Image (cartoon, rainbow, N blue to C red; front, side):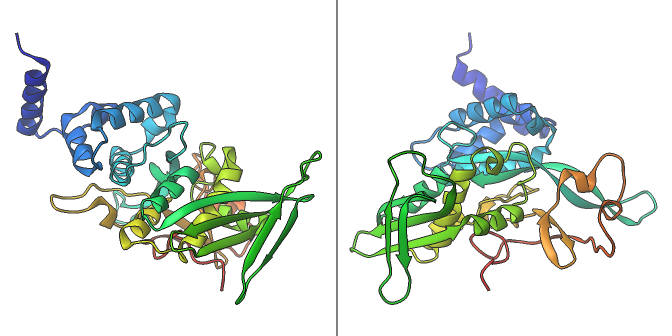
Length: 323
């Protein structure tokens, strides 16, 4: 009688022989080939079987992930594996989020057209961002907090920067006014970033997945706001290129898997946007709905709609808010 290891090897050889690609996400997660790719990408000490089980659980909890393209799901899972961040767990390290993108295709008449496609976006969580920065070995402490109306709060920039925050503890603290992040370095230095609620909401509107009901922006706003402060602060931290590359994977969509010798992190981000009167906003399900109506019918004239795809050029992957 064959042992489990022998059966596993036999299945792997069968997959190689047939060359058949998985047609569904469930098939993908159960395929030996995908598990082998995940294992190659994982840091030491992490197990591909566990990542596959976590991904299967995510698919069961969120059935919309099954409707996404197999390629985008596989790519997002590989990015998660390579960064060593387990996705869609209570730890909140990273998320696989289903969202609608616009993709070019050639119709039967040979004309270029567009259609909506459900794909998986990889998003780093608040704790995942902190985890990546801590790996630099240069940061002794990093945290983020919210500031409420009744708190005592002051900060100063310039040549003598400082930040002071004393939370109000005698009752309700009032509504949130600011969020901030602080990092202290092992050599004694420090950095901080303060952002108003309005600034945070502007960042949220630029998030491609903000309209998804599964987006952490809509379920864990405080954590996402704190993560935003940390990412904005990251440019002032002593981080390696590798860590910065990891942070830059936030809110990415990839539609292909790497060829032999390629790095998944080097493949272009294919997240889609709609340009409306010069402002970039995320393409939403309403703008590519099932009725087939053009988005322009829903918006006031004049409206210019132009979908485009580009690779990220900054840590957040969006055009900077600060001029």
